[in-house]
Length: 111
Image (cartoon, rainbow, N blue to C red; front, side):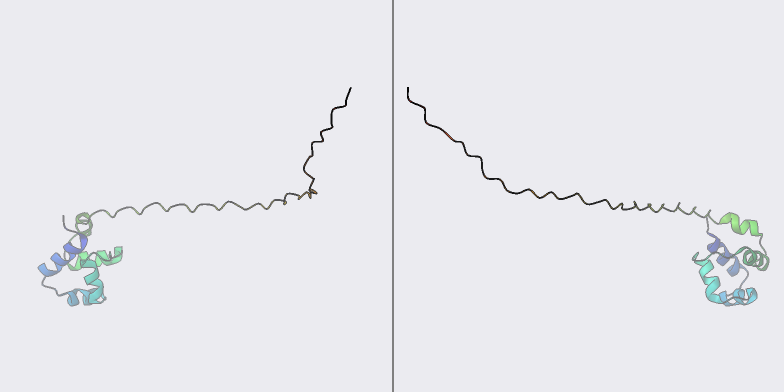
């Protein structure tokens, strides 16, 4: 199935019009019409109406031959940043060093 741009080009050539001639009749530059024919840009509705009239075709035929535009993808949701909650610092407890425990062994008493 031809694209919209291919159909415009085919109809333009069938009517013996150069790119520049069609562009002039539309009040546009040849580069704009070329971008349509290459399917880089899609003409707006008023432009399509005029193109259809100049090329002696029905706008419904022009558009019906064009493939349906692909739907735009759903935007990816931006994650909501998690707020940073500042907490109170843990209290520092100073502990004085303790000597190592010493086991005191007393001699046994004599009987």
